[in-house]
Amino acid sequence: MPQNQGDLKFLTSFYHCKSFNEFEFKKNQLITVKGGKIVSIQEASGDIDSDTVVIPGFMIPGFIDTHIHSPQYVFTGTGYDLGLLEWLQKYTFPKECQFDDLKHTRNVYEKVVSKTLKNGTTCASYYATIHPHSSLELARICVEKGQRGFIGKVNMDRNSPDYYTETTESSLRDTREFVKNVLGLESDLVVPCITPRFVPTCTSELMLGLAAIAKEFNLPIQSHLSENKNEISWVQQLHPESETYSHVYYDHGLLNKNTIMAHCIHLEPKERELLREQQVGISHCPNSNFCLHSGVMNVRRLVQEGFEKIGLGTDCAGGYSPSLMDSMRQALIASKVIHIESRNETAKEQFDALHYYHVFYLATLGSAKVLNLDHKLGNFEVGKEFDALVIDMSGIDLFDHDDEYTRFEKFIYLGDDRHIKQVYVQGKQVI
Ligand code: GUN
Ligand code: FE
Image (tube, rainbow, N blue to C red; front, side, top):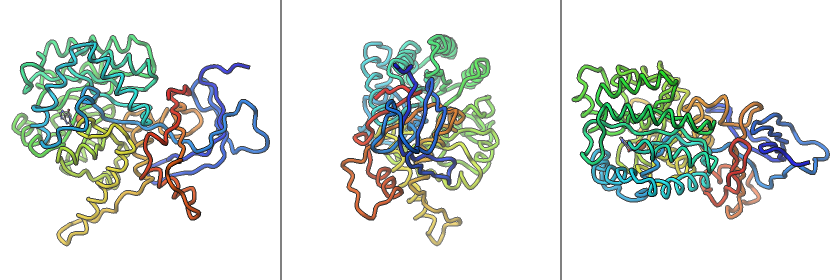
């Protein structure tokens, strides 16, 4: 009998996380998928049906990139000689302004979505550009290629170059139109995301207007926060009325449980308190933080303080890799830097480095929590959507002493897109 799209049965082993510290390996499981959702997970016993797909390697949940700039893909892997503010002026804005051209947009955005899917990103929170039609094109491409996306039309109405800026009025008008057009696609894969670039490029009036649109349509919000020391001083000069950088967003109605903030490296204790209270999701982008010399974010401290919504982002082109596998490894290195520094005699607190299963959590369930999608995505549970990767370890040498856990640890440290053989989103094979 022909199967309906999204109706599948797999015999597979899998790895997934149930929380930051709960990593699980399940051997020989029968996963049944109906209408793109997992309807049962059972230990395999006895004979299997002929329509069951036997997976020779293992499965993991799809990776979720909580922060990536689609237009910046054109210069990803170049231009890492400058810090954030100079990098934006010299490399970023001149390239982003070219996306008023729809042909250029389609050419680049098809490559971004294909490349990230191939690397196992089943869901991404994207920043496009200030151009509403070009940003809508990104949403269309995600739908065509079967990737989930939060799609952000970027807003910037101050401190932006003449060739790449908006008026407050046009920014708000274009955002409304963009939101309606994305919702008009009527796809459950894509969601419009309100995207003030960051405080320095958004007037108070714009931020307030964007908060109102987010509220009216109940939309997620994404922005950058506390990435670079010069950026932080600039924000303090622009907004002496607000207690901290985080409070500027809060004072303009942009900080709540639907907000995703990238970086959050240099936060003061009272900012961390505010972000935790407001249940803001934090996108850790370690590759970018190293490449733009921004700093080293301390994931352990946030976890110790009770943050639950922490995930990973590639932040292309601030980061040079579009792969969450790279992001996981850079997060491991960042945590090792924090650990080493915390052993200095002058350090006040000690922090353990993260383990491979912690960064795997961040790239899957943690990121799902950041996007408030953990009821649907992030691990293999009955009722959740089937977004999964089929992993084949060929090419990574294993030895007699290797067990299920060291095998997976090797995958985290040594794996790449060559080991991601199939990609499923909502039960549909997209790679
Ligand atoms: N802050 C404001 N814009 C950007 C951007 O495009 N990339 C990064 N990493 N930080 C930003
Ligand atoms: Fe960014």
